[in-house]
Image 1: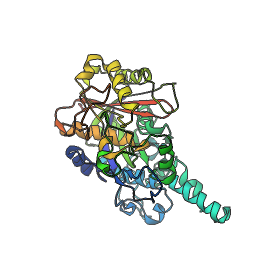
Image 2: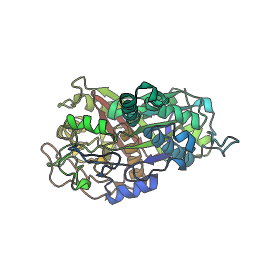
Image 3: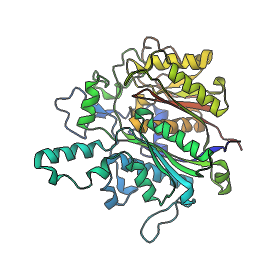
Image 4: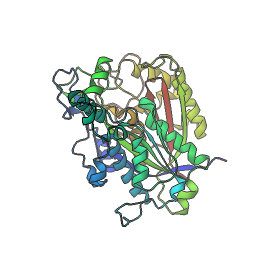
Length: 423
């Protein structure tokens, strides 16, 4: 019999909240975190808006000297991990070196973090130094700061975690895939505890310019940014790039109960598939994605009718939203019309590799507090978008089990299933 895996801690750094409870209140209020880009001069760009994390102070969680050696995406992950480990009661008091190490068996604790791109601001700044002044003027920590595995690596070092430290790089599916890998590690008995989720920080000229050239980003509403992310709406015109991290503490039920931890939810199932179709577009038939939904349900031992809420990938792009809607009908059948489906990206934007962790936490909070997060800016349904998207305002309702979907460039599909914990 597979080990039951539970959630005992959560941490969030996002455009609509830098703590779990602040994030939760923003979801309930339908608050937008989208605004003008302040991290670089957008002169010459068609895209001038993003979901930025405002007033982020890494020194609240990370030693100032160490923080200077971390790219922004690493700082987000480390801060969210500190929040999550604290909530889980897994951090010891600071030692003589000022470090707070995990209380769990360090060798039986894993770190699995999803990331799509890495330290783009480090790459951009170092390139400029090289071309302006030559290679000898490049910052010496360019490589160890920019590479995507450094979120997992720094979390392991910060908290004295000696188990496996892995990084999933599957574009926008990375955070959910990381959770799935952590689930499998605990089920297989390779770890008792895992620090897992996703992180991203790519609001840079290079990233925004690149996505702009793909015609993937919203440009219509740069003058009213809070209305720009509008998943499933007829007048959507692209996603809004955002940043942030969502980290969960996963444990085997046995381990959590033995130490008397408060259990927040059960992580019941996961599945990942590939469309094998196109480098940026989802399969218009929804076959690969619907297969992931069915496999995740089977992994969780649930039927489609057992799911009350689906946190959609819901990017607000012309292609994704009708394809995802079609996929849900294919996977859930008639139950798709009874599901509450919403995209919290309408509020916090598209956090790329950070989305899977952030959106899983959104679902857990919705299940905890009995509400369905809204899809804000939903005014007129787009063609092919005819499900219940919880338009504009949060709705009260009991959630016993939910699914969250994350779909990435390259055809990656990841589905995670959580349900209320019962002993």
